[in-house]
Length: 277
Image (cartoon, rainbow, N blue to C red; front, side):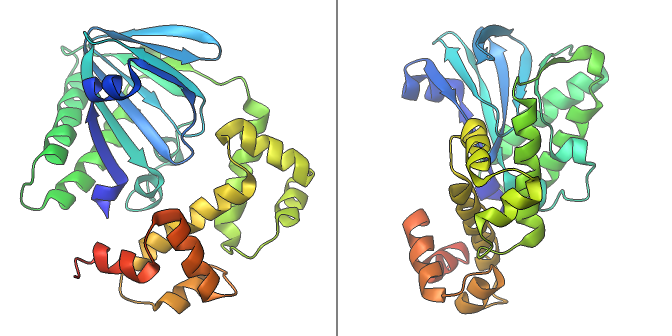
């Protein structure tokens, strides 16, 4: 569901929750866009501080270590997009649009038609998310696709691009997640992935820990739980069929793992997603 793939929050809520200091962290399934309306925020990245002043936006892909300082005088919005946005309805988009791999900072020049268009689209995303209007999900899906396309139209010369130091680990990690998607089975052992990458399982563990803070097994679990959620939002397959499709040998284990990660059984999640009582 598109509503579960998109979340919008005000800066003051974020600052209040973290007392103005968000310590360096990694999102392994979220791409975030910060819209700085007034004031400034301080980005912590690569052991450096980067001040991002209004009016501007800051785009942070998943798997990048970063932190922030946000004071009470800074206003704006945070748009978070989950993996399902990039791997779902927008799959046909060019990979550079779907999977950006660097932090980008852009100061809005509202006299520039592309900048003005992007600024308007971002605010339309915020408005749709915060209001219960007819056909909300259709509007959000359309707006997010348009948002990603127009962001890609900003010329490179108008962007401050910040790359992470750990490019070698990121290459291994990107290939690892690609292998997980290509082979599409929870049952595949870790040494299979390590062998395909020509590294040891220990090295693979260090790669994943460095990039995301999680083990390879935890990343695989998160991926297949997300896939299970997507499939449960439909009525085509039974719970057991979904378990077997995802490579679980035991539907009972699948149910226990799903409940451990989500707090709901697969049946309970499906009923909730489909609006059943």
